[in-house]
Every structure is written in structure tokens, then in C-alpha cells.
Length: 573
View 1 (cartoon, rainbow, N blue to C red):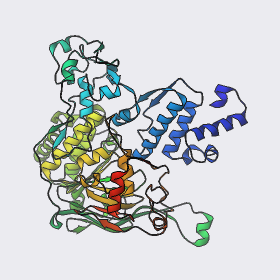
View 2: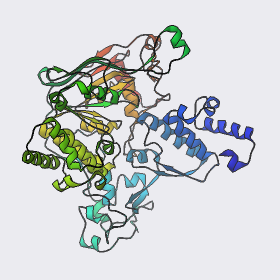
View 3: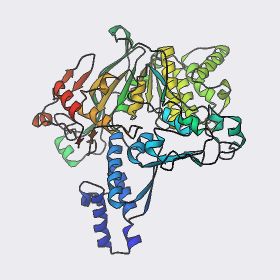
View 4: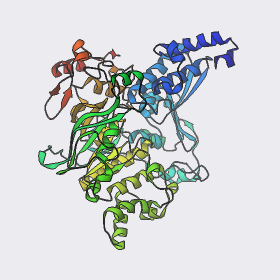
């Protein structure tokens, strides 16, 4: 890139490349410059791309979802880097994202686009506080807030779907989905108008004054549901000391000499209980073992050790060894519904498959059951005859949920079920999952990197790092100090859709260590901003009980954690 645009020698270009890697805060830039892309982590690759983009000192830098595929901790570091570099380079940035929290953290101004047209534009501080378009209001209302209790509210959603580019409505393109649309809105398209609200705040809405006066409301209240205290009588899943080790096929000479075959310790001694009607949320960075643990529970990965007990049955490790009755008890919803729906079969046939394989139903009863399942996930029965490519991504995920619920499972495993969906579709699916759980009493294991979604959906939250459990507690308790330092870093990195939000700034600079060569002592100590010394490096930390089933695995006394995490509002790296 440097040689193409600058015409300098190869040696000068190499020096410039190393300098640019240093500018983007890359550790050991000279060594990294000699590596290939597959040898770098996701965060390192994103730093390289930023360095390439800045090498010509551009006046405008366009960034299209640059942090969407990254863990929340890596995303926070990259966003800090982008903000610092922009101040140094004085470069204008067009930042494209669906993450409203990222916009609030990074941007000065924001434009809200719907179906190819600008709906609203203005300073972030005004648009997020005084929305002047119902679409903006709907987007912000669809985002789960960590400070709200799921027992009190349901998320706002935007009805309907984005129109196809070749079939836009004649009037306001948002009118078919707008709850306050009037005849004038449907008759002609509203122009972008300067609202005189200050700082060039413009909107394409005839009713903007009414929208401005709408109370700030990010969720709808519902009747308060008391949270039951867990008891030992209603345990649905009891996973005891579950391990999953993957042997490494390519051995090094040292391994052969020692006669020791290295393994990837993806899941390393996790014990977890889920009770009837509760949702257990699992959080952690990529590569920490969340999905592998879930697949072991479902039997899709054969556990290396431990017990998987559902009800009063100790299940075989492999799904092929489980009986039809055992298979009915655990069902799974995957991240990508396209990969779990046969493109050649109607979605009705896909939902019917577990019913025909695991339940002996007559044709009439089967049809009635299918209609009931589609209704339960808010899909019309006419959808049963559609192929997967004829429905939207959110509708596909609803079909996947209906299929998972077909056998009336005791445990529903949801592995990143909403991460690939738009904000408003995510909110609708989260409301559906909560409604189904309230109605059916199904237990759920919910895995996501979106901490706000986990907090909203879960009764309890477990934090996993490098194949081990480090903290567990109720969703409300785990938000308040004391936190395990890793949990503290996860919550600190969470982008909050409020430009005025105050957050402590705890950053994890290094990547997750290899699960082959796990650090001694506390596994988190090489990255821990709270490390107290050699005890963390040499001794495994004990479990400490803070009461009400809130437990933390850490050397630091819990009272001390409360004190430092309550008082500390500075930066920790």
C-alpha cells in the first residue's frame, strides 16, 4: 500500500509499515510485520486494516462495521484506538454500524437511514435524547438496557419489515410500520426539514413535534413477576465436572521426546445447575469454551469427562447413544438458522421433523401441533408452506425456535441466536423467548457475547474464561460489585446507547491465551488489571461466597473488591 501510493523504496516502505503498526499500538510491530494474516487475532487484524487505511493520511476514512465481529473487550480497545488516532490525524470518519452503543461512545453526529433514505440527522447528544423521528425512537426502544429488570418490562419493537427497494410505498417509506402514521404521511413523502432544534438537527417526519414530546420510554411495563428462589427439587440440568479436551494432531519434536500428547482444554471442569423455568446466561470471550460446553450438554460434542444429568438421568456423552426420550429433553437453537434449515424443504416440514422422529402423532394431530407451534412464535400458519429463502432472517430464527420447542424439551440451548439479526428483530425475538418461557416453564441455557441481551433474558449469569467458571450469580447481583476482575472488564467494555453514560474504563490489552498452554495459578493473571502479585501467578484462586448464591473465584477478598470497584472510576489496563 505504501509503495503504490508513495513510490518509495522497498526498505523505506517496510520501515513505514512498522511505524504504522506502532501508531496503531500493535505490540512488537517489527515481529508482527513479518507474520501472515492467519497468525494474527481478530483484534490484531483490525489494527492492521486501520494502519493500512491511515497510511496515506486520508481526509475521509470510511469504516463499515469494523468491530461487529469482535469480542466486546477487543471492540472496546479498538474503539479507544480509533478515537485516539482520529484526534492525532484529524481525519473525518464515516462510521457505519447497527450498534447504537458504539455510536454513543464514538461519534459526534449521527444519521439514521431506513430503506435507503435519511430519516434523521443531528448531534449524537440530541438525537439520542430528543428523537425527532419514530424510526429512531423505535430503534432506541429495541435495545435492552442493563439497568432495567426484565421482570418489569418488555422491549419496544418495530412492527413489520423493511420494504424491498423495488416496492417502496408512495408516501413516507416508514409509514407502514409507524404506529402514529396519518393519511398525509401515506399520501406523499415528507422532505428533510430543519427543525430549528439547534445544531442542524434535521428529520424527515411531518409529526416530528409530536415525536419530540413523546416521553423517553425504552420499554413497556408489564405486570411484575416475582423471581422464585431456587430449590434442589426442580433441577433440570446438573452438569458435574464436565471436561472436553481436543487432542492436537500435529505434534512437535519436544512433545515426541517427552512422550506427552498436548491437548486443547476447551472445557476444563465446569459444574453448572439450571433449574425449572430459569434461564442461565453464559458470557465470555470467543475461544473460552461457551459453545463447546453447550455442545457437550446437547451431545453434539462427546465430553471427555464429567456427568450430564437431566432430571434424574445421567445422559451418555454422544448424541448417537441417547434414546429418543433423552433426545426430546434437550433441544438447541443455533446462531445461523440457514445452516439448520434444509433449503429444499418447507419450513413446516423442518418443524415437523422432530415430531415425526421422536413422537408418534397422527396426521391430524401433527397438523394441529404445527399450527400451535407457529402461532407460539408469532408466525402465521401460512408460513408452513414457504421455503427458507422466502422468509426473513428473523422469521427463520423463529422457525428454528419452533422446531426446538416441538418436542416440549426440558432444556432449550440458545447459542448466539440473535447476534446476526437487526436491532428491532433482536428485540422481537427476545420478547418471544421470554413469553414462551413464562408460558411453558422451559429452562434455557442462553449463550451470547451481548451482555445487555444476556442480562435482559437471564435469571442467572455464569462467566466462563479459558474453559473454567469464574463467577456465577443472579442477573441483578452480578451487575453490582463485587465482580470478578474478568466480569468487571466485560461490563466495562459494554457499549451503552447513552452518550452521557459514565463507565469505569477497564481494558484487556492482550488476547486470550492458548487453551493448550494454560497459564499457571489463576488463568486470568496475565491479563488481570487487579493482579495482586505472585499468589495470582502460582496458586489457583479459591471460590468465595458473597451470599444469595453469588460466588466468585478470586484471590482478592470480596470486601476489598467491593471497595476498589465502587471507588475506582479511572482507567485500568
